[in-house]
Image 1 (cartoon, one colour):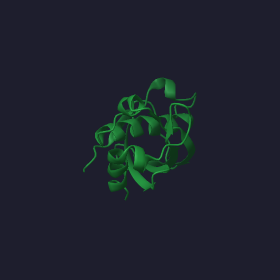
Image 2 (cartoon, helix red, strand yellow; image 1 turned 45 degrees about the vertical axis):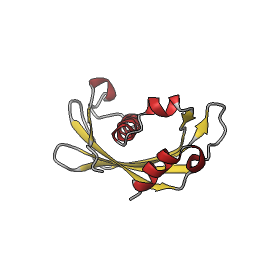
Image 3 (cartoon, rainbow, N blue to C red; image 1 turned 60 degrees about the horizontal axis):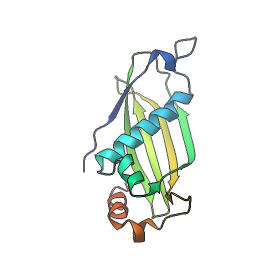
Length: 137
């Protein structure tokens, strides 16, 4: 399955006094791209929540390469690094309009039920498990 890159245009409020994007925003953009990625894979976040599943972030890495600025378009590619049913590991690559990598990152996620207990995804949600497993790079 081919996924469309997520496009984010840097907003003025995301920049600091120097006109450079504040570092905290890149993590927010990863979340936006992740939600878009899951929707493109056929698993929109609201559907997962309706199924009784939540997916908290366990860890985040974010390596900044090139500064971005107001009104710049940033293209984010998301990939599944690892998934074995308990934890999901995603990778992110952000590029500017010239194709330069501006940031790379990773996130890891757990899958819990509404009560906060871990879910056995392979057993309880086999279609979701299969979809994610097929996306591992």
